[in-house]
Length: 284
Image (cartoon, rainbow, N blue to C red; front, side, top):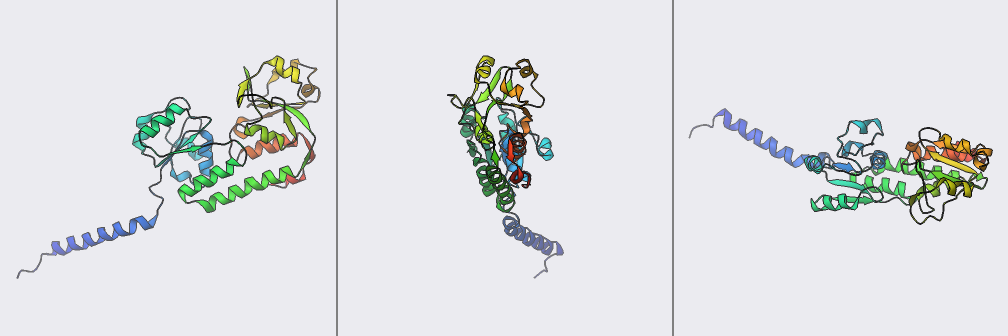
């Protein structure tokens, strides 16, 4: 019998190594196959808060926080999605936002057999709840628990502080004037600082209002969610908010996105209505 050539043994060794690799691969990192796409900027932030930023492969326009998100592939915006690009990215999960992702887009993605995770934030407690949900997908619960604890502790401490009871107009856009109803999470955010939304009874979650309607309501405070002051209010010298110098401007990144950064906006708002601000200032 002829002895096998050395190349035969070399092939056998290589084959055994390949088999070994196939057996060990699934156990080396069970999360390597997870690929997330978020269809709202705040969802990209919540993925980061869940400790899952490394699994994020696609985002939409205006997703800019944290810095790492800026380099992630964009798949469209709130109105138009590049389905071909999503097919190429082949995500295992697509996170949508009930108030921001159109039904048509969601239905189209479902027809393409993508795994759609529909999220909804109606109250502040839904923010840590969504972080927890994402972490359960990516098995990053330990990291997420830190941010969940921080969010809940901060809100709890703010609620234990004492504030004066003032009316407020929440200006989400200036031309035309837009605001939110009492069912919006922004209303809960201002309420924990002692403010009452003057348009609490709006039938729609978010809607335009006239300047005359705001003047008639005569709010004691005006919250403008913008990157600069809305100077139109200075023309109305008899408004209580103008008389009291209670026109507060907060950047949209800190009040229009239901994410961890909302805590910064709430703290700034509460600082303008403080009676006992110690609990807030002691929270990270």
